[in-house]
Amino acid sequence: MKLGVVWFGDDLRCADQSMLWRAVQEVDFLVCLYCDEPHQQRPSRYATQGMSANRRRFLEQGLNQLSAQLNAMGQTLFVSSLDAFSSLNVLLNAVPISHLYRNHHGGWDEQQTLKRIANHFPDVRIHLDHGLSLFTPSELPFEITELPDSFSKFRRLVENVDIFTPLPSLQKLSPMPDFDIECLRPWQQKTIDNHNTFTGGERAAMDQLSDYFSTDLPSQYKATRNELDGWENSTKFSPWLAQGSVSARQIKASLDVYERDHGASESTYWIYFELLWREYFHWYATRYGKRLFLPGGLTGKHTQGSYYAERFRKWSQGNTPYPIVNACMKQLNETGFMSNRGRQIAASCLIYELGIDWRYGAAYFEEQLLDYSVGSNWGNWQYIAGVGADPRGGRHFNLQKQTEQYDPTQQFIQKWQGHVGDTQLDSVDAADWPIYPAQ
Image 1 (cartoon, one colour):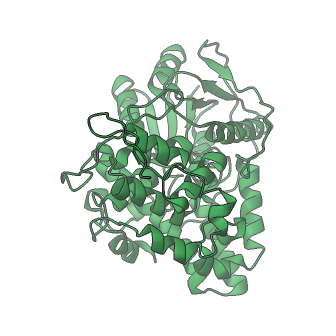
Image 2 (image 1 turned 30 degrees about the vertical axis):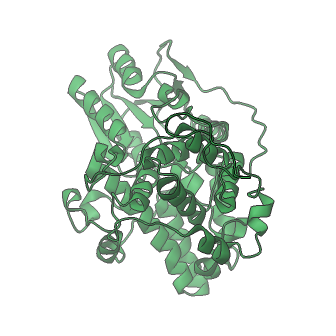
Image 3 (image 1 turned 30 degrees about the horizontal axis):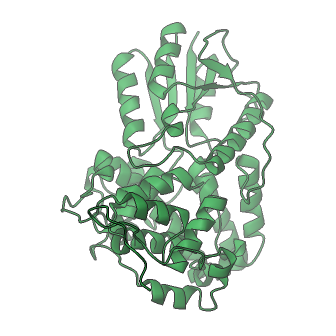
């Protein structure tokens, strides 16, 4: 009898899951596992406190939905409160597991955990699928070690590569073996008071996918994508993509149907363009590993940023002298979401106006963003800081011009009370002497 483990991560769905299809064909019994990493609940070295309440709520909604779907397929979702290596180490020592199924994750820590498992359990067959990306490595027209050094070069090489049709959900999975391990417990459905705009899980993801492509919004996307607010101004797919409750291939398939029925345009192409940006950073994280977190990034160059506790606190709370930045940060803190344009503005301010090490901003976004994804988040911060894939060497935005262009009537600033902020950035000088406001 063959026993397998499906190790879920940022892929909380049952549709378009080749690892589930593979498991049904190869094993007689199956354990479905999610590791609720404890480090996500602890303070980090970057003065952040771990996963925000918004992110936690969104995750638990996703786990509720995944558990319900697995139950309908004759399975149970087990959740461990230990880190992934410890969880799998206990399980693989207690149960004669022969197969481990996992989707490739671009994160350095996730890749190192998988390597440790492979080293400690050489008799376990590890099947690595690619449910988090549009392409598999074999479909890319280059080796991962030869990833182009800019998105433009990457896009030109891959934008015409064929993408596989998404797989449907299975009706039934292999049954669960009998075992009793204290650190692994069936997920208990949680009653979650959702006052947020976004609801986690595959059902909500499919609703958004269907709702968006049933309108003419895709044909207007390029003109509205830079708006700072407004549900209809962008696809809003990113939180569910980051959670894996919808796949990039599913979105591309829906986009193809829309273009077939309504015609392709520059705007509809731009939706695919954004999927390709996400794809680039997925392989970027895979390629560069822990260099994603170094102060000099890929360039290794010396950066001027430091850590000013007061400035960082004011930036993260939306309490700076810059109304447009305050509005963006207050929106993020309340909703767990910020527009792409807002992220660029806020990041530029932290790095260039406040002089803070870009990694503190990346870590704060990791704490708050519903759509946090390691490659996209840290890669984009490197891009703005000029230590990553930007051939221009960084992006310093003029905050006044950004306000005039993207919030000319200051409607966004007023909505999020961006004018309510401290007009004085520092209260003490370098020697900790008080700085008194100018009279």
